[in-house]
Image (cartoon, rainbow, N blue to C red):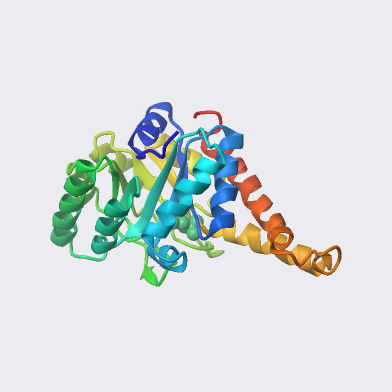
Length: 288
Ligand code: 13P
């Protein structure tokens, strides 16, 4: 099966009241581990790629070629979308050309009019090539890849205007933040999420900052229209923890345990296990 746009998988999730996980990839190990989880869970999946991670992986074209080749050589049969995460205007255009099947244009740092105009342009370009589009209203808190935002509650009327551009799914700030949640985090604003959901006429919503949100809150968010949940930090944490344990136990020092194929395996397996767990919690397990 070839990689697909995210439109159909997200619309099905929205109708079926579950969410698709969009898991960020950083390299070959992440790509293999997440695809293996999706296949094991028989779940559709989105692979998110930030512009910083794409640069690390030697560019958008390299990402497209690597993911396609890994996907094909692993014989993946569940629906997979390759998605630009928090794309700039130029980045979104470049990814549409390079063969991404889905893009996010994040114009939330522009004033609303400029965000609106640029979003409109990206939607037309993406849809002319069968690529799905996510746009954003209201900043997501925290810092990701050098882009820092204080986390706002998105304005429901602005959400409606951007949703009405014909985008496929909308990211809206509802008190969520990227990275590890601080101990005094107030939780998601379900009041605001409900108002946004009422305003956007059934447009699927996206929850960024999915790492570390208690599953009761992600379930409630799904009930209020969230159909895509982004996860990055949590996979980095489980990878680092499993790798540290392997080294602290001295396993890199016996039986050629320093071979990268051995050294990176516990971390990669931890990613696969975490993704399967999240697919169960988000309800996409078995939905391919
Ligand atoms: P976390 O790193 O907090 O999981 O956020 C991921 C994200 O929202 C990617 O856009």
